[in-house]
Amino acid sequence: MKKLIILFIAFITLVSLNACSDDNSPVFVAKPDVDGIAFTNSFSANYLLSKSTKENVADRFIWESADFGVPTNISYELQCSIYQNFSTFKVIGATSENNLAVTVAKLLEFAEDLKLDDDPLTTNTDGSANNTGQVYFRVKATAGTTGANETFSAIQPISIKWIETVAAGNTCPSLFAVGAALTDIGWNFKPTGEMKCNNNVLQAKVRLTAGNFRFFQESGNWSSGLKYSYYKQQGYTIDANLADALDQENFKFVGTPGIYTITIDNTKKTIVLTASSSLWAVGGAVPGGWNFNAVSTIEFVEATPDIWSASITLSNDVFRFFHAFNTWDTKNNYAYYKDAGFKINANLVSDGSGDANFKFTATPGKYKLTINGVDKTITLE
Image (cartoon, rainbow, N blue to C red):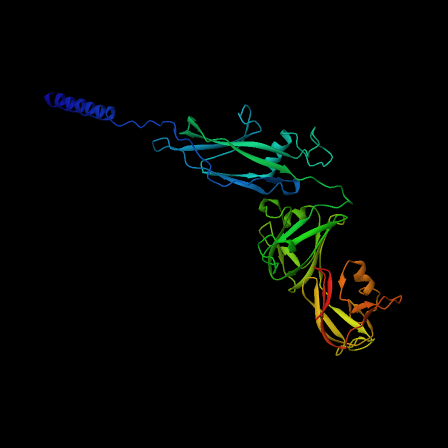
């Protein structure tokens, strides 16, 4: 019995010691982050929106980690409102990470809340376009699993612009071709990559090589891209020399390197590549005479998009250019270039005939003749 009493006393003592130990354990209490949270990404001056790019990521919002003073799970919620005071708002998404992507589709929702649209006929009361506005973002952080200690970032305003559409059959906004496959452009926005529109057909002449490229709706705006997948989903027939780069964004050029005219026909829903062709000088004033001769007929090669040049011996007679070897037509004569607004060297005049040939009037000899479709000039050197 004495032994049982001693064991019972020892057990009670051990339990008491453990209880004391537990009572003295440190307790960590989370406190609100007094410094708040700050966005760390750079925001664009304007975010372009369109239904054709709704699947694109408009921007990825990135922020600092919240500091609640103790190790704890942190939940973040990215919120957006059309009101600066956040009287009402929508939750873009929740995450435990320090970033969240916002798609064009999400921004379009807020554009609609602002009563914006892409109709050029819709205007504000002052007559300005009803396609621009401002929305507001903030991020909320909470500690633990119960949503305690709410902490908010400063409110970040961003400007949005819904690209206005143009009725089919009329002119349409330019597109801009950019990418490594465009030898003279690369991943830079350049004027030579602009595809101008006429009657809903966009065209540009570029030098292509193996690689990827993409079309953009605004020069310098990377979020305005029109993906390969967009054109496929819209039912466009795409030239066999263009393939999916397998990144769901870019076109991949798989044809023979050279100069091509890219044509996007939004009415027929086709994207076509047309290889550049040389010009051939034929007539009494040039070698080969009025015949197409593989040896003596002078070929003007398009070494640079829209610029043809060759050394040629000229005599005082007439000639004209042909854009297909051994094919007679009435294009590329003096009248054709004059009507197109070309400034033509004074020693090259019209012969006044129905064929409107060029007539060379200077001292016979060897010259460098250049047809520059960019500057719209025909020069002799």
